[in-house]
Length: 251
Image 1 (tube, one colour):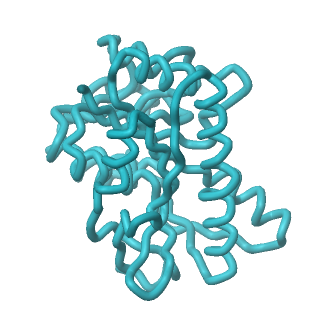
Image 2: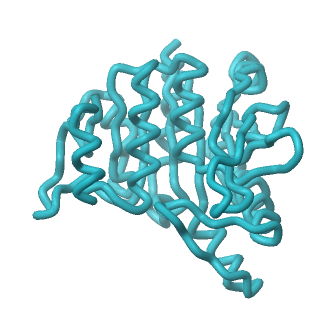
């Protein structure tokens, strides 16, 4: 069975989005989608409603104790359950998980300036495998634990680490841009891992694209290629799986 890790961001899910439909179609085709989601836009909206300040560093949210409560509530509660419900309503079979469940994501703080933000230290695939073996699509909210505290862990990073841990066949990031562009706006159809460092140094790759690129590089330990695709395009996921050349491929 082909295992495909699909990272979806909340900003890619719109009124006419086909991502849910495509995920269900993959399951019906006897493929094994493992969904990892973000939801930073909704987290920011809730922080604004609650008058909680939001700042970012290198595309990562600086997270104090109050911010962490909002992050966990929104991602593991609202966003995760909305996605699970949508898949089930579309006649798929999904179960919601988070990085906290079963100790799936062990993390560690590597930058004190980010607060309660962690990098993935290890992944326990047992909770994911148990859901897959029962015939369901795992829908995973980001988060991790360091043995003392819950930590906010970037969903892109988690997706890359999960792809390696479960030995996925494909890694696809669905986002709200067409892929990686150079400074003139031209889309990179292919990026070699040897080119990444120079593009980061020149700030061609910046902001929220940074963790996506690092996650793609990490996933290459398991998959042959990782791809960043515009998830707003109709049936982008299915078309990529069927071999259409879209977005930016990292190999």
